[in-house]
Image 1 (cartoon, rainbow, N blue to C red):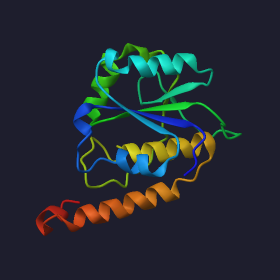
Image 2 (tube, rainbow, N blue to C red):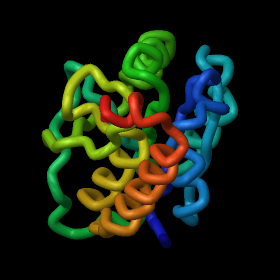
Image 3 (cartoon, helix red, strand yellow):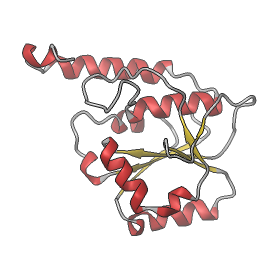
Length: 172
């Protein structure tokens, strides 16, 4: 998919090799994506310099207390950077807390929606995978359709479930 808004994923190091991770699917699907692994502010120094050197807007997609609910842009955004935190809810919160520079960015939360990523636990039914969050964010910001990414997620889920014992599948 040819996204015009750059997607930058700040990935907690423990997610890098997770079997159920959706970021590798995003890397294969989007033409403008960057994954930066780390936890502390120092891990993101190079990225912060890149963002500071760019004149394009930067938005953090994270449901903080200061976040505004993202609504569909009247006119598709042509440039900018969408930052997304990747990790379990607990690890994403830790990334946010350890990196105060994130709180200085405009922050957006996604409208409530039902998650379809059922093979991983989330604190609530609206807990989206990184792929779902990026798909919804890009649709709202630049009007890029979610369908191709969500179809890919469906195929990924089905293949993951094929390798699970029946007793485990019943939980999902």
